[in-house]
Length: 208
Image (cartoon, rainbow, N blue to C red; front, side):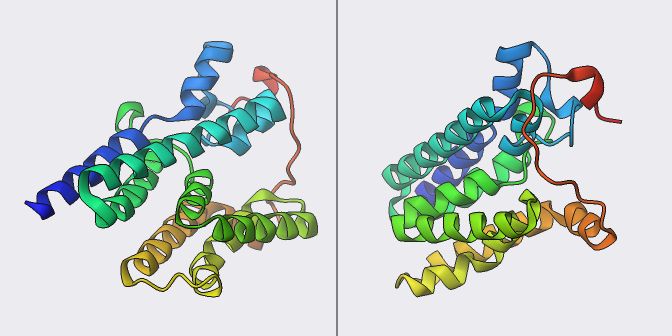
C-alpha cells in the first residue's frame, strides 16, 4: 500500500510538472507559443528574451510554485518518499510535458525550487553559484549547468545526507545537464549567445 501511495505521488508530480508555465503564459500574453520563437525552449530564460524580464520572472515564479505544490502534495500522499519522488517527476514533467507534446523547458527553475523545498540553504547557495557564474560568463547556460553540477555537493555542505535525497540531487542535476547538451556544444564552438532580455518581437526572433 505504501508503494502504491509513493507511485501515485510520482504520477501527480509528473502531471503537475507538465503544466508548462512558459507555454501558458506566452499564450495568455500574446496568443502565441513561445516554443516557436527564440531558442524554442519553454523556459523562463527564453520568455525573458522574447517578452522581457517581467514575464520571464513571472514564469520563473510560476514554475517554482508548481514544484512546491507538487512536492507538498507528494508528501501528503506518499510521505517523505512521495515528497522526493514527486520533485523528480515534476522536473521530468516540466521537461517533457504530456499536455504540450512532450516539449518543455530545461528544468533549471524546477531544479532551483526542488533545492528550496529541501532547504533554504541549498537554494541560497544555488542562487549564489548561478549569479557568480553568470557574472563571469554573461550566459545563462553555463550558470545553469554549474548549478546542476554543484547541487549534490551543496546538499552535503549544508548537511543533507539522506540516501534518497542524494539520489534526487544527482538525478535532478543529471537531467538538467542532459537538457543542456546542445548549449554545451555551442559553448565549445563559441556560438552560445549572451543573455539579453527583450520585448515581444516575433518576426525577428522566430525560431528557424
